[in-house]
Image (cartoon, rainbow, N blue to C red; front, side):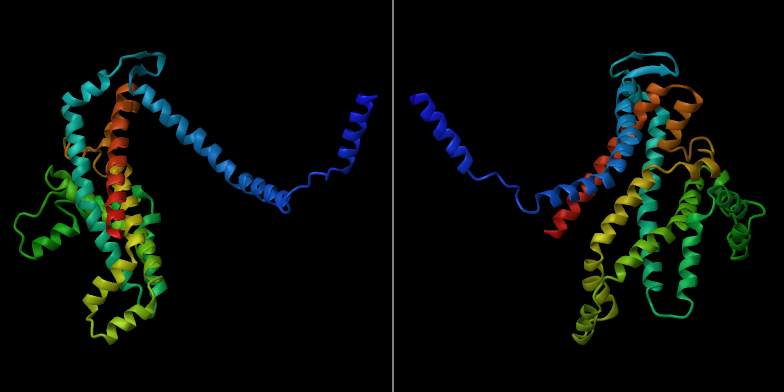
Length: 315
């Protein structure tokens, strides 16, 4: 009898208990979350398959000796020890730093100058912006052929112009071990400044006109307004452009391959081309992977330095 009474009380309590209800809006929230995942999931899947997995394999291969055929043999840190004694690697590393140190500020200054010039209201500004951007979408092979003709030591118009100005011994450009890298940097700057000009132009158009007007009323000159108004407002765009420009400069490959092929000698050999030579020409994929890892770490270190430096300036 006591058991039946307890069961009856439990049934009465269950019948009287309020049914758990869903939180208002939870179903809509889950639906929106699933829709968001469906948009970003293909990107993450592509990143995992095409970038993350190859990078992890690259790190593994840098500790092996593999020539495409057969099984990769584990060699530990032998490839990295070889880097320390490899004179060609040292030459490629110095050439890469030379290209980056000169190319980054030169391109940034040229792109910023173009952006400031084409940010004005003038007739035909859309045409001039298109002309400035056109080299970036032109075939790199066509650019190399044309500039090699312009840099020709004997028949090129550049040396003929320098001779007309009174230069007795004009540079040999791409045929000279001293002038080959400056020639490549000039072409690289000319080709890429239009692309970064567009990014900086977008940043300039976000600078509030009221700030310039207030500075002008306070008697600030054009140079003072540029230093104290334009540059601080342009800092996020400048940071993005500098990071992208730095990574692109350290990875330069196609321009040098078609213009000088690393020559004369090794005067324009850079790390990306050295990786290509060791991997796809000499089938030393383990050693080429070790060189790739070193280039990856250099890019990461420089990018982190730029990030923390920019964060310190903003603080």
